[in-house]
Length: 223
Image (cartoon, rainbow, N blue to C red; front, side, top):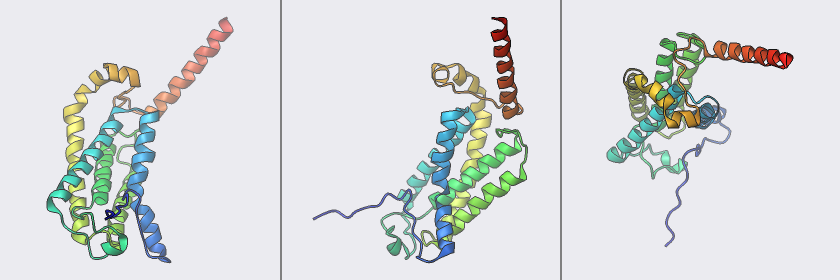
């Protein structure tokens, strides 16, 4: 007998045909995927900041905790899971909500501490964008039938809690070791760095690039 097939749920989002709101919310449900692959992968390739790397590590740990809880509790998804072909997975707590509210909490705390890339402390637009996406994700999971209200609320609370705890761990416990990581073989080989001591990274890099260009121009003239 052929075993039943199971879908890869990473981008497996369904909505009712013709439902424009559902179509929009289906894309909103994919925001965690965009953040993971578009945001953090790009950040590692082009920035390699320790703060960003530990941010991503925290999200991975959060999702691991989510899977452990889901496997232990084994609470079923709502009855609509049959139409969505998701009844073979558990629903409490919502991993999408946990991811987005962890992300929003950690990023907000970074902003309040003035550790964002462009040195904007307590940026209202940043808060509005991240928390709006988190709330829309929470609403989308119920609207599309993937979770009950209780399941998304559990994911929300857990995401906020873990985001705040991980921020404290990174910036109070691990941050003193950032210079050691920078100077390690791993840090030197991959150009891993910490720029949290620089008030405005964009301005600093802009000024350094201009200064280096002037030095090169002066050296070429001298030759």
